[in-house]
Length: 143
Image (cartoon, rainbow, N blue to C red; front, top):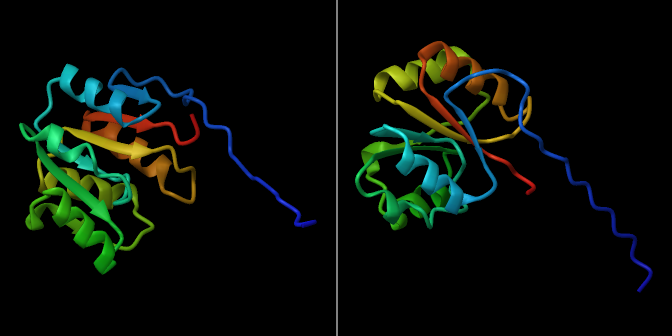
């Protein structure tokens, strides 16, 4: 049909910072294995509401999830079995100080994120995880 197709995929690599509590996974199956292999109880997911199939497999953990404040996002969380009081619906960007406040408020010992780059606040998540000495698990976006 003569339609120009342009694909822009960012290549995602592991970061070069040195933090012994940082882990990288290619997908949510690997994520579950990593979570189950470390000593954590309260996990903050900052990965959004599009893929919540993993929730039922983490019923021994207290799951908190930060999502955009859209009705659809909140409904997906509820449908997946996340407690209403554990849904943090906020609009970013999020500073390191705000991430730290959430870590302290909910006694978070592990943060799960996507490697979202500067625009997605990834650097601030790294900074707050390191300063609070919690686990940081990064789902590599394009693997």
